[in-house]
Length: 260
Image (cartoon, helix red, strand yellow):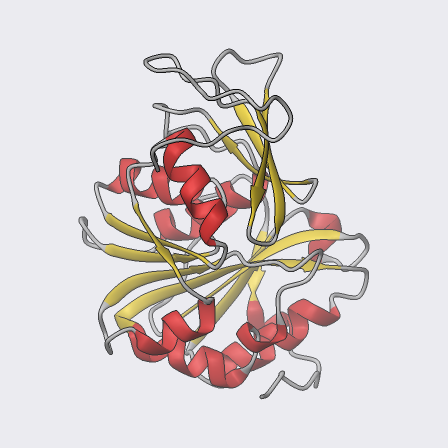
C-alpha cells in the first residue's frame, strides 16, 4: 500500500517517520488507529469503533488481549513440531499471527474479508505474516486436505461469530484441512449459561476426538458475559495459559450443534 490519507486530518503520512494515528475508510465502514498514551509505540486498532487489536510494531511478542494469550496457550500446550503452518481466520491487526510467527518460527497466513482493512494493516503495521483477502469459510473449504497444523478462528460480526463458521459443516471442512493431530482453536463470545459455547462444543465433538475450553472461572461456570476459547483436535489437548481450562465433554448437556 503506497499511501493512505487519514480521513480525520486529510494529510499524507510522511516517510521515513510515517504518522499512522488517524481514522481511515475501509470496505465495511471505518478503522481508527489510536496511540496508547501509556506505552510508547503501542496502538489500538478499532474497527467500526470496536477495539480489535493491540499492536506494537516491531514487537510481535506483545499480546495485550487476554483471549489471544489463551489461544496461544493451547498452541503452546499442543505437541507441534516447529516450524508448523497456521491459518488465522480473522486478521484485524495481525497481533496473534505475528506472535505465533515470532514465537515458533512458523508460517502464518492471516485471512481478512475486508480488503481496505487488510491494506491499512499492511501499510501501518507491516506484520511479518501473509495476509489474504477472503471470506473465512470459503478460504477454509479451499485449503488442501492436511495442509495446515493450526487453524485459528477469531471472526466476529459485532458481538457474534457469523453462523456459517460455527456449524458442523464448517468444522468438517476445518478438520479436513488439518494434518494428523492438528489443532483447531476459536475465540467465542458468550453469555450466562454458555449457550453459544455449548453449541460449538457439541458440533466439534461430532468430528474431533478431544475438545477443551479455557477462560476465567466465572465464564467457565456460566455466570458472566465475555470470551472463552475452545479447542479441538484428534490428539490429546493441553493448555499452557494463565486461566483455568476444562474438558469440553463437561459442557455436553444435550444442546444441539449448529448446522447449515
